[in-house]
Amino acid sequence: MKLRYLAGVVTLKYDVNKCKGCGRCVEVCPHGVFLMESGKAKILDKDACIECGACMKNCPFEAIEVNAGVGCAAAIFASRGKSNDVCGGKGGCCGT
Image (cartoon, rainbow, N blue to C red):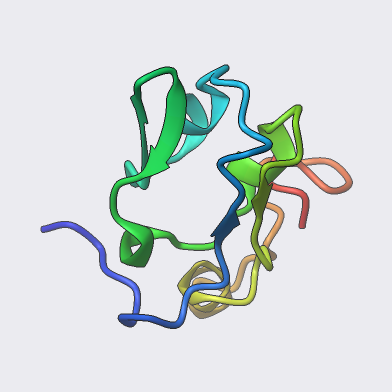
């Protein structure tokens, strides 16, 4: 079963004009929110976003914005008694 966010509430914003087609967002997204199409990233399934922030942190062109840690990812971590920093170290790879 694919995890789903609440429809229409995710904070993910993507500016196709800033995208240079590196594909990092596709590589790092744990839920397949992005895909590459015609040399640019495209949002495939916005409501699958768990707002971890990995795409934003890894986009060298600042084409992606998301309020990392405010959505269901934060709820999952909190329910397990863990911090938002699942990557270890200060800030981690997710920028939280």
